[in-house]
Image (cartoon, rainbow, N blue to C red; front, top):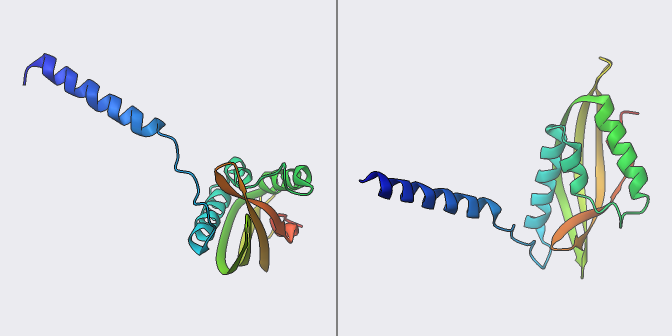
Length: 151
């Protein structure tokens, strides 16, 4: 292959790669189902275990959430105090009511404090409220919120 043709092929492949990377994400399905709930819970657990508070908080519509700013402060404190986080989320039930959905989740968490103290462990049932936010589904509430704290 001639060098000019080779350069053209490389340029074409690079353009195709860039176009694929910059393609808009597919919007969330219009209806909420157990598969969408499982995807959201997987993203939530991955964000916790990766210790990524930005990814974690991006899953919540803090503007719509009652006391969203307070929840954000709590989450920031939790991530600041925890050295490592392990979590297991098991979807128990989903309910859909038009543009809103609810999730019941059996949750286990273990967080190792930065100060070297004993790990905090919790087993609770969490109840999430979910609603569409733009073209995505987001959490608009979680109870009990104390699940995401070291106290």
